[in-house]
Picture 1: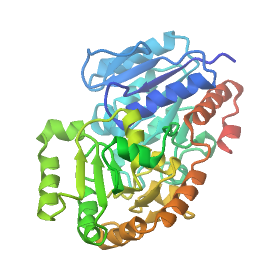
Picture 2: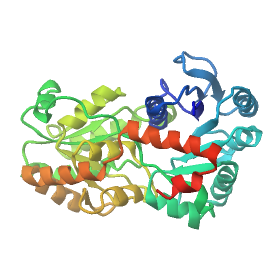
Picture 3: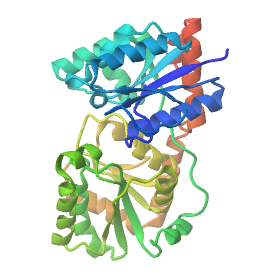
Picture 4: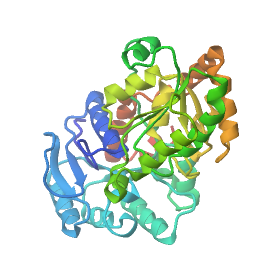
Length: 386
């Protein structure tokens, strides 16, 4: 079967995790044998320069754009639409404008749910239930999300498919080689990566570093990534400046380094290869996906995390360490233990790599392609049971 599947999502050069996911998903589908994967890119404003696979843009706050996008897709001859859903990228209250797209589509829709709240507000619950009803299948990236979709949102079990978050191939070279390239030689490197903003828990990690650094003089914490564009638009760099002031107040100038820019994937993977300990100190217990955590686990890093839903699932069985929310002392103890013991780090890394088997993008792309093909054969249930 020669499959054509369209993706509706944010997309590079827009800078967000969802855009990166969509670009990787497209490439994974093509590598798995899809004939064509056009993209309808969700944008803040019309215009801009886009890669050739972007066949249309969808201004997120314009009612008419959702209907126009549906009309285009209905005429395009695609076999399915792969909708990437996150409440914040669509217009209207809790992103309800996406319902206009779904109600106007005659093409089968597969929706990947990047946020599944365990305690949604009434509007969030109602919108997501309507998204589920309008979709032929919904993809969850974590087992916990599968249970939430069934128990909280009433999704029919036969519609729910569990496909993990994909990961790119690790970069060539050794950790020490990458440290040399990045000016990190001789340091034990802990790292957090992502678009920076409140809720990432960077404050917790800095407080932990204040306890850990005197006991591990070579320990360096990298905070890698630009300020989240929404935060920067609202308040400039004041949030980051507050973090930098916290570093000075805690006396951590020689132990914390900010890499304040948006990294392309090659550079990100280089930093991940160089780091010894990866930290996700996130403060949202309901978070059910994290591309950066998935990358770190797949590349075989020793991981310390707060116990948000996705981390609990991915790091279970000894693939990483969990510390309580808000407990800087516990995070500091974990940092010291791992910083002082390379063998302990290596053991965690081996278990992490084992946990991420099957997460490579070519394999994940093949799972999505099989799901698209199953729509024509009415075999979604069989795919979902895997």
